[in-house]
Length: 335
Image (cartoon, rainbow, N blue to C red; front, side, top):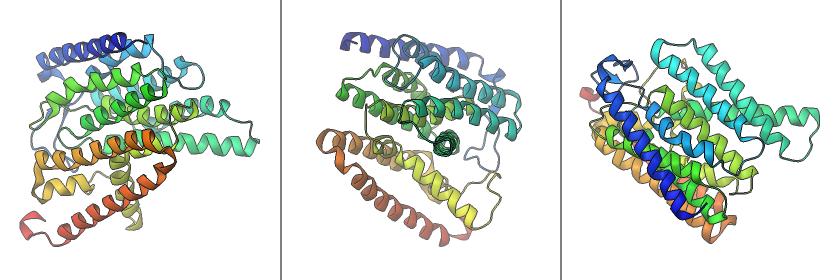
C-alpha cells in the first residue's frame, strides 16, 4: 500500500470515528451510562459506548487491507466481532459473567487454532497446551485492558500508542499496516473526547475488543514474521504490569478477585492526589516510553528486546513500590 493510500485510510478512519462520536453525543442522554460504583473514579454517570466510534472508523481498513497474520482474516474479524457484540450487550443490559467469559474463550480458541496451524506440527498434548495457553493469554489481555479503562484518557492513549507502534513496526518490516494505523487513527477522536474531564467512556464494547486485538494482533504479527515475540509485550507493558501485579497481589491476599475494587496502581495514584490529569500524565509517559523503546530496539538491536523489557520492569517495580509506600502512609482523609 502506498503512503498516500495509507494516509487516506487513516483520514477515513478518523472522520468516521469523529462522525459517529458526534452522533452518540447528540443522543448521549439515551445511551447506557456507567454509574459510580466500587471501582469508579467518577462521581457522576457517564455515557459508556464510545468504543462504537472506534470500530466504525476501523472497519474500512480491516475490510480492505488485512494485516500479515496467519490463516484466513475473516476468522480474526469474526472472533473480534463476537467479543465486541457480547461486550455491547453487556454495556446495554448486562451479561452474566460466565456467558461473557465463555464468549471470550470461544473467540480466543478460534484465533489460537489459526495461530497453531501456522507453526510446526505438534503432538495432541502439545497442541492442546498451545491452544489453551494462547486462549488464556488472549482472554487475560481482553480483560486487563478493560480493568485499565477507569481513568480519563488512559485506555485511549494506550490504544493510540500501542496500535500506532504496531503500524510503524509493520512499515519497518515492509508488511501491511493499514489496520493498525486505522485503529490508532480511529481512537484519536475518542481520545480528544475522553481527555480530562471526560465526556464519554469506551465502555466494554471499546476496551474489551481493544485488549483482545492488542494480544491477538501481537501474536499474529509474531507468527507472521512482522516482529519478534517481545515486541507487543514491551509496547503494552504498562497495562500488562499494572493489571497482572494487582491481580497477583489480590490472589496472594485471598481476596475475591471478581469483586470491583480501586486497588490498581493507576487508581491508587489517582486517589493519592494525582487525579485524572496527573494519572494520565504519568501513565502517558510510561505508555509512550515503552512504545518508543520497542520501536527503537526493533530498529537498532532486536536481540536486546527482552533486556529492554527487564529494564522497564525494574523501573515500573520501583514506581509501583513508591505508590505502595505512599498508600500505606496516606493520611486518614485519604483512607
